[in-house]
Length: 217
Image (cartoon, rainbow, N blue to C red; front, side):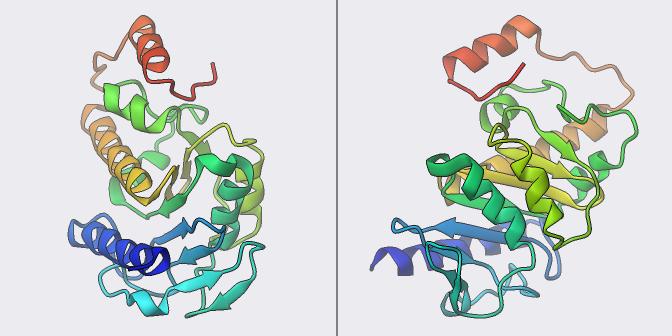
């Protein structure tokens, strides 16, 4: 099995798992993953994560030109911005409309520079700081501009009234980080207004140093 065939099947498998566990619904969400030669495989627009066909995934060349497959997701500006600004650190991007994360994006008292408080070690290890980006119409190229404005410093963002986007070194890492983000959102809602005990500054700094985490103070 060659690299492209293997990655096509992996995208379909990961998407189906996310769909089966209720992390995305209907035809919402999109995934992209980069091949070794720089080409991108992307889930098509209007497609359900529960019923993807590996042969029909959208294919882009290394210069970002659409090559073959079904019509790609309208969120390509969002995906492209992560690849452009984070370079070799990004091999895949996952975007969902997951319920708990969207709910957190609606709260009036969250810090837009760091959406989640340090509730768990793994939220820091897999996500770093999560930036809240303002509402932008889905598919608007301005979404890509907003990500570029972060200059590659964040691997995860939360789009207000829309959903989370996570970039990872490969598809597995991006999917795991996305699941961690949704679980952290769930914990945030469960403890909201309860003044939960959070990790101390020293504990956070220890995690950042030990696991070499991107963390801009």
